[in-house]
Image (cartoon, rainbow, N blue to C red; front, side):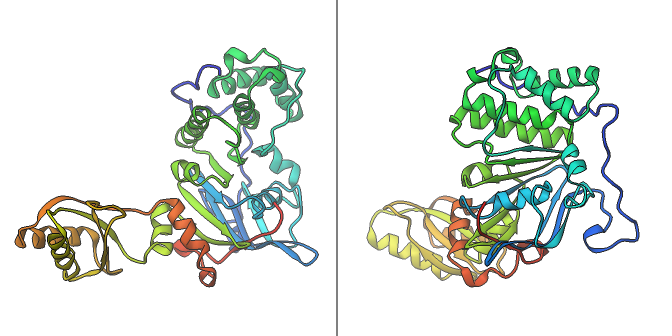
Length: 374
């Protein structure tokens, strides 16, 4: 593996950078003016005969964030991406990408959006640098500007030392990083990545996710990342859209998704040192009788902290203070107390197990659903 990406990505804006089309100040709905939204869809739908691949998708992706489309393979994520790029036409609904309609202006959208498909293809007999030059020519980037840009993006993805080697000598991870460099050559405002870390070794995954985070933080671009890998989505995405059973059933931050698809209440772990069964049962009884506690369950092993579920309208910080006071008053030996946020795996499992609750999305977004071939 070549040297890792450099520590800082300069937020460079080259001369001639294409600016997003300005929305009509008096427009509403899909064309409502905004300073931050880079992708917006309203009721976006794709049908293949009787099969609904994407159904009334409402989505917004902002500058300076990574939005994760999370779902199993075949859930329709790639179909959504193809519509956003103008590579397939929607059956109904609308989309705007950097202020443009992909159906009416697909070429202009492609010039202003970087895209890396799940299977990156390059000319194997050409070097990494030559492949990027080819992309620059396709995008009509002036040669002198292109050379500086290529040097910059190769450095950003950590491929400078292998830039002049044939691509057919690259590892899978190197090909993925070259794919990101290829998408960055046009200096996009939006980067769309379809399963960018599939079949990459763990170190390569860390490097790519770190690179994406820094691109967003330092350049302010918007990234739409499609993946079925829950831990990677949780580690890097600011907001997440969950696909299940053919529908986009919720979207929002981890906290918002946890509030919707979690227990419906806060969750505390309270560790109490006990010397036997009787004292353990007394600890459970004491915790259960605290006002605002919904239920108390034991950990998976003896000696594990108690799982304390608090009422939905109870404040976790206030409940911690109350529990601390009660435990001290009852002369129990407190070992630990902490608030617990469910993992994305927990949220996803509970979300897909609630098919009757798929009508809305979190954080005030409209309902959306998706399914079918990807």
